[in-house]
Each structure stands twice: as C-alpha cells, then as structure tokens.
Image (tube, rainbow, N blue to C red; front, side, top):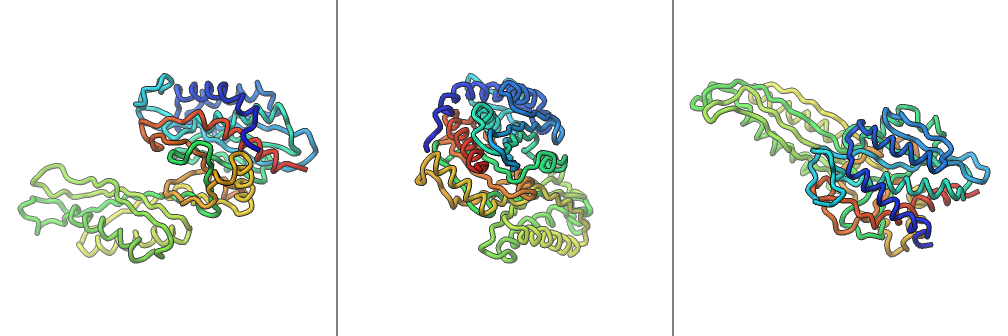
Length: 387
C-alpha cells in the first residue's frame, strides 16, 4: 500500500500547521503556545481524551478504535525548537529572535497531528492509540519527565514508537536498524587548579594550560587504546578556557567536552578512564582537579520485534527498495531513548531530502515528507492494533 489517499489530501492543511509552528518556535519546556495549539487541534478532531501538563508541558491524546481490544501503543513527536537565529529567508521563517525550528520538530508535531486527524476519523483499529507530544527534547530530558510523570502506566502504553526527519535521506525513504541507532551523548567539564605566575618564570608556577594540553591528547587514548575497536566511541574536547594576558600563567584552566557511545559497557569505560587519566596527569604535575561528568540520555536502542513491525509498515508505505533496514548509527543523541528504556519500541528516520543539516540556521523541514509520515503513523497504528 503506497501513501494513503487521505494523507495526501491532508498535506496542504498539515503544511499550514507546520509553517505556523515554524514561525512561532519555543524552546525546552516553554512550549505553552505549541502545546495549546496541539491541544486545540486534538479537540477539534474529536480525540477521546486530551491531557495536557504531562511532564510539565507535554500533551497526550487518546484515540480509541472501533473494535474491542485492550492494547495501547504510543506514537511520539517532539515539539521544542533550538536557541538559534534562522537565516533561511523563507516566508515562514521564525518570528522569534534567537529561536528556530532547526531540527524539524515542527514537522514531527504536524505529521502526528495529521495522523491524529485521520485516525480520529476512521478508527480502523482495535484498542487505543496514545499520541505523545513531548517538550524539551533538545537537552531538557522531556521524554524522561513524561515517563517519570507516570505516562506509561497512566495510559497503559505497551509499545512506543518515534520518528525523526533526516537530511541526506531522500524524500520518500525511511531508515532504521535493530539495536543502537543513536548514541548516549554525555558531557564533561574538567577544572584544573594550578598556581599562576609570571610567564617569564614558569618554574615557579604549576601551569594549568600545560596540564590541560596534555589531557586533550591523552583523552584520545581511550578510543585508540582502551575501547574495543568495533565499539563506537567519540571523545571530543570542544572548549578550553584559561588565561587573561600574554605574560601571565593563570591559576586555573577548564576543559569542556562530550562523550558519545553506543553501548552501556563502553559508556562506563569512558567515564572511568576519563577520571583515571585526569587524576593521574594532574596529580603528576602537583595540581588538583574537579570533574563534573553528566550523563544525558542513554543509547537509543531499537527492540528487535518492534523494529520488524516498523520495517514492515515503512515497506508498505514506500516499498522495500526505499527502506534501509541497517542504517549506520549516528553519534548524535535522542532522548526518546528514555521511553525505549521503559517500553519496547522503535525509532525510525524519515527522509528530508537534500536540505541543510540539522541544528543549522539554514535548515528547514521539507513539507513533501508530510504525507509519508502521516501514512507511516496511520498504518503502524492500524497494524499493531489489529484484532
């Protein structure tokens, strides 16, 4: 079955919703206008229950099918934008200075709303669909907030599915894989405390810049000499703060960085080795250090059976030749991982064509993807909730 006729009919209307949301971006949990828009639309569609305030500003809509059945599946879209200034020049460009939908969450929200309208009209399934509209995906752990708010238990969600657009994948194509599809994106801050002094007398100082420079290189040994070569890991120092003048060795230096891994074993290894390396090098030079190591979301891990269901649905919508079933994992992170830790499910990429990269001020969601996304959501609900 190709794109659903009704999904194609809805594309123009859903595009209007998407462009409205694009013009009015909101970040993190401050998505009150977006959540209100979602709530209003769900009520207009005749959704059985609309529950705001889940995970602070998330919204859950409940649609019950025509037939009997006690199973519930969750379909999730994220709503928040990024603190970035848009330079696309599009007629629907952001009207809010310093904020833009640079990751396509406006498209995700709109596609799920389109699916909600379709499913509320047809109800061609048994059981219940929970439509999950999540805040604060971009660094705010909104998925965890919704889960910790009891969402899974409250609505009886047994399986959960997510979708994200991906520039570089052609329109009309999907990509997915079993197991880890996106990385655990952890971060660290290392503060080195030495003893400052005149740059002409370095022997009277404990130079934190010199120590920090050794750390930058030594941390790469974790990937090169500690981690299993077949287990992906990225360690990057992305910021180095120290000093105030040409002729002064400072008292302190601070390194900032990120660690990306695709397994919990490698994740633990990385944190342990960072702490050991920092302690060893810093103490060898007579300095002291503090490490602030923050674990963000876990690996986005697709469950085998649910991934097979997702592949089957995507294949129905676009054909087997347009579904990559073993896409290379990306080392970016996705907090939908928190939902996949609580319930089995799968996360799929939908093609956004030849557009600018995500988190880029030139990025825009391609509205031509909308009918594919709606069709995927609808067929997934109908297939997973057949009698």
